[in-house]
Length: 253
Image (cartoon, rainbow, N blue to C red; front, side, top):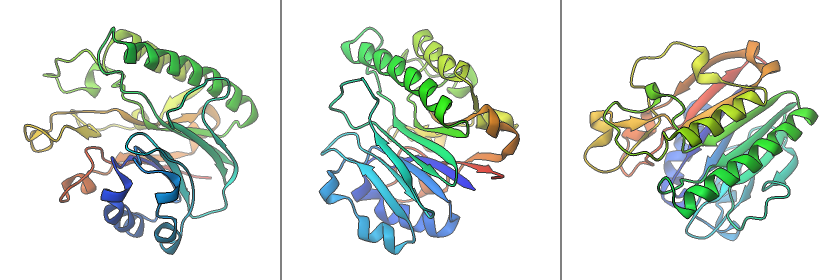
């Protein structure tokens, strides 16, 4: 079972890339972030023609998340219970006995800003939600654009910004791990400077000036079932790409 996460940065613009990628990879489940479209504009017919079912929570211009699956989708939930938020950032569903939570984590803008405070509040609410979900669903994957590079090796050495690498953000990431999760990517050896996001500016992708901020965390009962976890950089090389690359984990379930 292949589960993926991909911030498409506008589903309308990136739909041809997504459909080609689905046809090539045949992933079982993919969580999408930053749809930037309302539900009425979601390209459901195109997704279904590609052989996938879909559940989605969209928002005009910003945010938006979706889960696509080749298999039956059940127990769909949207948002973080008890956390009032107009921003569409979380969707969860169960596929083949695996609970998948797809999240588009807040960017935070700058350390110390109001948006940064919102990010930390959101992360605390998500962590509490994760604890509850793990109690109900021992086999769980938390995927998405976390907007956090959890360790120094997950950011280019010349990255000078505080955002994405600040101590509070990294502490929040560790809290998710402490809930009973494991970073699937770190179960394997990867080359140095392995990233999942590269700015559009200053030829960042060509220079490999990036961050690893897209993650798939797996619950402890799934750790022994993880066969691989890779960043697929091929879509980032296309014309008019998303600034993020998909991350794919393969599970023996």
